[in-house]
Image (cartoon, rainbow, N blue to C red; front, top):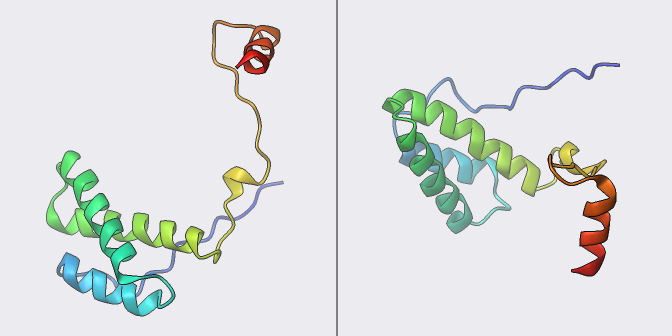
Length: 105
């Protein structure tokens, strides 16, 4: 069974600046502190700079990342990655060795 993925809602087709995006995020997420929104923006600006995105791309990608984070943190969407946590074994050690190692720590 395949679930249909929903698009992350956006308030408008694009933003002219990080400041305009911040204003829209504050309006759209009134329960989230302005400081938290600002921290998200600063964090995402750093990431988009590392990927050398132009200003328009950076704002588009940044908006989606921040909205997704805020939707998760406010409970507006479920964190499906955590609803069925599984142990992932990295190569090298067997499951028994990893289980034993976890018990001795």
